[in-house]
Image (cartoon, rainbow, N blue to C red; front, side, top):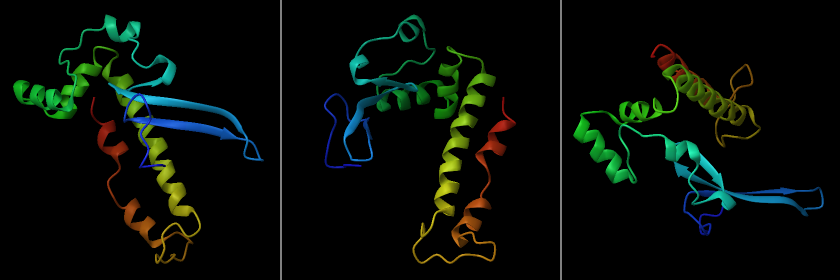
Length: 151
C-alpha cells in the first residue's frame, strides 16, 4: 500500500501486480471502485454499462452528500435506502446471499490473520494455540447470524 500515491483516474483504486519468482512483472492492472458496488478496470473507467444506464434507481445519488440527503428526505436509514436501490437489480434474497459471501471472505481473512505467527505483538496464545485476541473477536456477534434472519 502506498498512501502517498494516487492512481491517475480516481482516488478509490487499486493496482494489482503479479510477479514471477525473480520479481519480473507478469501482469499489472488498475481497478477502480466507482460506486454502487461496481468495480471497473482502468480501460473501462468512465464508460457507462448497459445495466447501469438501463436501471432506474428509486433513490439515485452521485455523492455521499446526496446519499445522506436522500436518507433524510425519505426518512430511511442508509442501509434501507441502499437495499431499496439494490432491489432495482435483484431480489433481496440474492443481495443477502451476496453480502453474506462477502462477509464470509472478510471473516476468513480476519481468522487467517489471527492464526498467523506473530500477528498480534504482545498478545499471548491460549492453551489451544490461538491468540488471546482471537477469543475476544470470536465472542462478538456474527453479522452472518444477525443478517440471515432478515429478508
